Figure 1 (cartoon, helix red, strand yellow):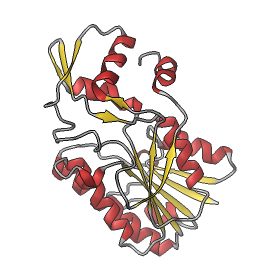
Figure 2 (cartoon, helix red, strand yellow; figure 1 turned 90 degrees about the vertical axis):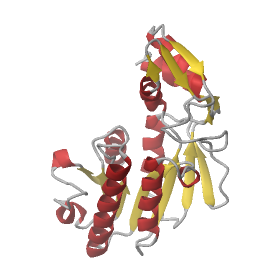
Figure 3 (cartoon, rainbow, N blue to C red; figure 1 turned 60 degrees about the vertical axis):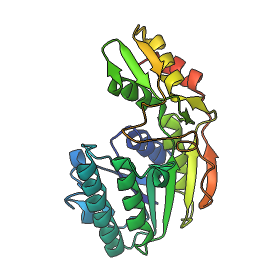
Figure 4 (cartoon, helix red, strand yellow; figure 1 turned 90 degrees about the horizontal axis):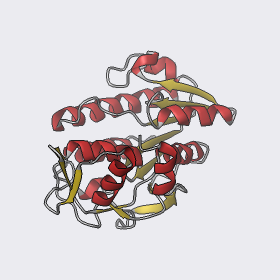
Length: 255
């Protein structure tokens, strides 16, 4: 099977490409660094020639509202047209749990726009909405820093290890398209402020983490149902990754 991974050199894409190649598939790791740019269309036709499956997992270099919306609209529209021309039979999109519940967050609106392009394309698809990655918790903490104080929302999350996301996508790539939305999450629900505190402690960082209900999430308002799976009747399946937070934290060495 020929599988093209758009975003194939990133946090999720790099390990995903390795897993698929180990399983014996013909895999194209597509990214601007390998000569394939889904936003401009450069290299797409050649990369998708003869492809059976496309995994759509790039990320915008800018999280500004207008930039991220433009990125996903251009990238996904170009992918859809290239897939139609190449006869690709399965378009897999990595999205975010709760994206359609957080309308005041620009990144979430952009992911919903991406999903809508795919569902309206006529290309068979599977949408996989994942929860926040463990690997992004340090970034969230740094973004909330004010001197020696870090203010994080105590909102409930069900985060997942990036490696578990790659493994799930590798499996989904070998299955028929669902033409629906599945959720992917870690095995336990934890509060964001607690996660940030534990990550900093593991790093030996002595800054104080304050649980602040007004801190929000990426500039938006969230509740305990916003970021966890199981709150959308349109979801067709739920996958749970095996890695628990303490296991990931020990393996990551606080980094």
